[in-house]
Amino acid sequence: MMTKYDFDNLSDRRIDNARKWDYSIVKSKFPNVREDFIPLWIADMDFKAAPEIREALIEMSGNGAYGYTYPTEKWYQSVINWYRKRHNVELGKDWITLGYGTVPNMHVLVQRFLGEDDSIIMNTPIYGPFAYAAEHNDRKVITVPLLKHGTRYDLDLDKLEDKMAKYHPKAIFFCSPHNPSGRIWSKEEIEKVADLCLKYNVLFVSDEVHSEHIMRGTFTSALELDDKYLDNLIMFTSPNKAFNLGGLKLSYSVIPNEELRTKFREQYQRNSVTSPNVPGQIAMTTAYEKCNEWLDQCASYINENLEITKKYIDKYFDGWELMDMDSSYLPWVDVSKSKYSMHEIAEMMANEAGVVVGIGDDYVADADDFLRLNLGTSHQVIEEAMSRMAKVWQENN
Image (spheres, rainbow, N blue to C red):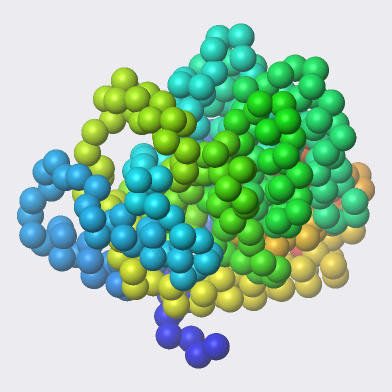
């Protein structure tokens, strides 16, 4: 693939007040962190947004008006076209509801579809805010551990069914592809979960935010399932991970069933969520209309970072095991075979190597021996980070 875009020349993350690069924030987690730290935590990328997006935002900014707006026809059509060309899925315009982030959407859903004594079921480990959405609204969380077979997770469908039958959850938060491991679920696996949801009257909520950076394999959206499953489906996604637009606070849901869609939108009205973010809508529309090639090249660049990371782990990090990553830019590393806990390793890397990594505490359950890295940065930064960590690991083992 001919490289058209420059992923080596990174943004200055001080200008956008990036949390991941803020020394005081990092120091609050690791008091003895080196000042010259490299942040491989928090799931945002250091690449400059696609030039087409930057140009659109410059034009909007220079215009000088930032008032109330609305979801435009152009925005709806960009979503429809994106799913048609990228995922071979035909969406109805009325299925789409603009939102303000996938996590806020989770809260809205919990508030509307779960009563005070109701519960959400989810496979763990899983993205922490899924559980927070339930717990912060005083709802219960039921966890079903994924089955770890070597460097790959599988669904425990028997245990999932057992817990659905016993606890009668109102909904499942299903992460597809899986966050944190990047595992892509097959169509057959997704259908089996959807079948259980129909059998036990559980709302199937599919988070597909990490579906655009594909390292290997083929992603299947829950929207590709048969119509009988679509009537029980709520899908959440956004361009935020794909195009690094998280700070613009824009997302959307796709809900084919009119009754479910109406209930969901009613809760938005109760929460007084009105007009969309002006730059967010423009950035998202531009991303979907003009930045397909940028996304493919970005995924290719991240895959090269993954190869760099694999080589270092295989050569220098005894006791570390990189989980198979089909998608995303966030490797999930099993350190259970090392002589240190994940907390000790994170402290060691922050303090001695000056590399800040994520830890399993942030993934609800069944993640006590895991670290998470972030490859959304330049080859040079990944080389420097892995080199520093390798040196420290060798010195301590």
